[in-house]
Image 1: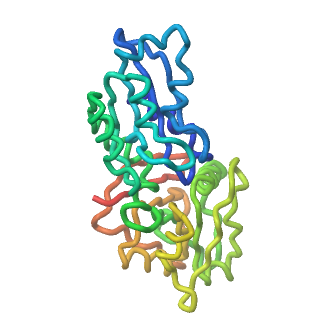
Image 2: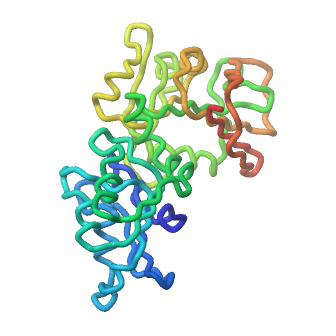
Length: 299
């Protein structure tokens, strides 16, 4: 299953809006005879690619093989035929599933179809990791809104600017990481004051990939979560300023918080950084040449 997760991440840029999925076929003697991942939306799914990778001389081994897949095989006709039907056709003996699909067209139907065909199915192996890989996809389908990341950079003494004027807090490496994060998101949002004062580009310049859709809000143009869902935006980065960030925190509209602190920089005053909410827990912390990035998620 860990290999499934490794493979799945290769589809991070091109699988969207579909989830990232990896599949591995293991023979009865423990040998991997086929593996694949969902490369691009509209193209073959992970299971199809894994079967395609099996050498002709190994086809006979499928009858006693186990298929590992990080997400429940689909059971419906979309842009491609159901993977559950292909698995049944190939005569696989056992299927190990990382987690159940949150998409309304699936949601356990793929697992049920395999079981009804007499295939042994085990569900929930590395379930937390499999769900975390596609957290944006799951949030979009379960909560009918994007996965929301609140992000800001602050000085060592807790300010996001210098006397209310923009200041460079990130270093070259952490700036690159910010652009990498942008390349993985569908949209990025700032408030009107930040837009008018800082004129942020909000693009991917120090990383390869597509720039996220640019959104600006104020009292006259508030955020409509339902509208974002209708426009198939599965992930949203909120980069501030402080008033905009606090409005999301007050409403409880966040899934992840990323705070970068320049541990060597202090200023005399300015705009205070938002307070981390009590229901946030640290899931990751790294230091990059004096700049510490801490990632929080809900308890």
